Amino acid sequence: MSLKRKVHDFVCHTGRYPNKKLGQNFLIDANILPKIVSEAGVESVDLVVEIGAGLGFLTSEIVQIAEKTVAIEVDSYLCDTLHEQFSKIPNFTLIEEDVLQLNLSNLFLDYDRKNVKIIGNLPYYASTPIMWKLLEYNQHIGSCLLMFQKEVARRIVASPGSKDYGALSIGIDYYAKAEIVLHLSPNQFYPVPKVSSSLVKLTLRPQPKVLVKDEVLFFQLIRSAFQFRRKMLRNAIGNGCVSLDMKQMDRVFTTLKIDSDRRGETLYISEFAEIANTFTEITN
Image (cartoon, rainbow, N blue to C red; front, side, top):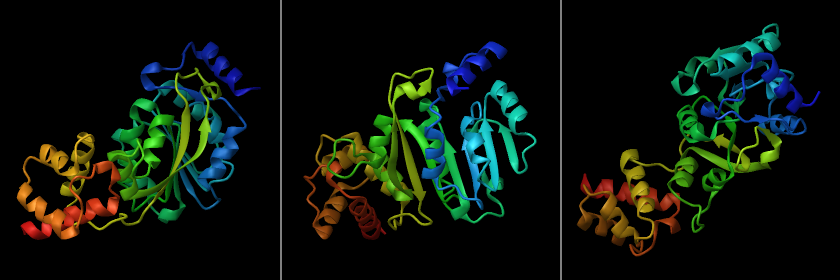
């Protein structure tokens, strides 16, 4: 039976259509499921946490390989179906909860971070908040394979100088190495969304990519540079970081030999780190 037919059967049986408020779009291309598990690098020693397990199509692939599978699903109707399918499978756990409200720490006990893998077909409206939450657990998670709207995925992996490069690109790079591993068309989902999707693999760094002495200042500088991305770097920082002494910031630019007329989109993460660290040294 096709996956699309299974979705239709679920609707007929429960009278429950995919919930737009929860951003439900079920992946119905069966050929993609083993590819997702392969791209996630799932092995027999792994703990896999699946966010948004839906009707269990991908879950069925994961439980065949992973040592332990934890499915997180907020929709009680879907949880009933998941329980029927997988409750008798050893080392399977179902959590009916919004992942943004969960303390995930207890899930990772007894597992080395390299064996903790997250897979998620995320609702687009919550994809970025969920991603940031997962990055907070970089000491416990090895990698994440997450579904995003294609435009968001491009921003996540963008390089300096490109039109998609911005605060999101640098923020992700600080915590993880990001790469797009698969593009999906709207027709591979039901209901058919209005946008294309991309699978992004985040390999979390045990330590941030750059050493910064003041993370608050570091991210404040980045946000300012891209909030006013049409402005030159000095003016953007001056507009965004109103509490900073710009005479001292000018000393920073001079010390680092960074042209303050550059635009933020041309700076690498290492340069933002140097600016933040040098400013901290000068003012302390």
